[in-house]
Image (cartoon, rainbow, N blue to C red):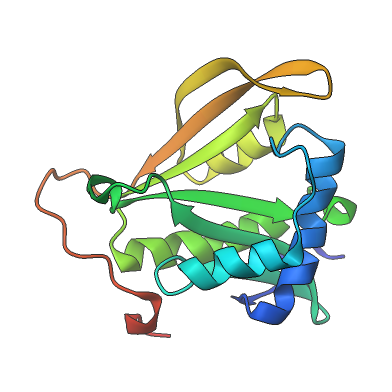
Length: 185
């Protein structure tokens, strides 16, 4: 694959959920970067996507119509004061890691979130994970803190790091978040 040139990006649809599930389940089963200990079902993914898709973008990277990665946003916390803060996540198929797919997804996701009016983006990273840290820092995320030994998986304790990107820091009253349907294409 020739880097980003052959990768398309589009909004996720319900039919993508089984492949997204498969991509993420690989990391659930084989790494500590996802702290789940049991694989998810595609129905769980579909339920999450349906619940959030009007307010939070879910994007998939494709190559020759095959889904090879996903980047999505979700509520950082459920309380209303957090409405302008979003958690972002990216997963790329383990078979094509480190080929620019994550960057391509974030090049599309971050501007959408900015257009919607989100002021802060947070990435929660199971550590150690130098590739994810490098990806987020390349997009202007800064280390905001680390919780030590909070996740136990594969007979080891792991840290969780928080990386934050502040989009607007004027301190003024924020406008309501724009739903995805209200954005220009």
